[in-house]
Length: 111
Image 1 (cartoon, rainbow, N blue to C red):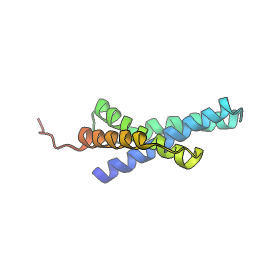
Image 2 (cartoon, rainbow, N blue to C red):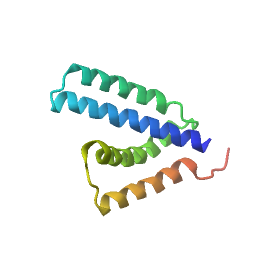
Image 3 (spheres, rainbow, N blue to C red):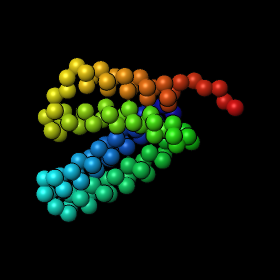
């Protein structure tokens, strides 16, 4: 179940970050309606993918996803935009991943 959850987080991050990037390109780089449209579709698909998380707790899933989004955004910047994170970016990303792990995968007593 953890492997499926991690894969869904990764796919959701790709769709959301990629969709936001496409919208950014369409608006800020004047690349047109095709980029905007593809971005809107990708952002919508992100919401669908996030809903497939095994946890039924929306707040918990979205809180944990926030950390995944941060790490994914830095990785997107490295791969797509040539961004070079500094040690504080890396440290912050690692802290976020620890938070994701605690929020989503810590053992909890079942009621």
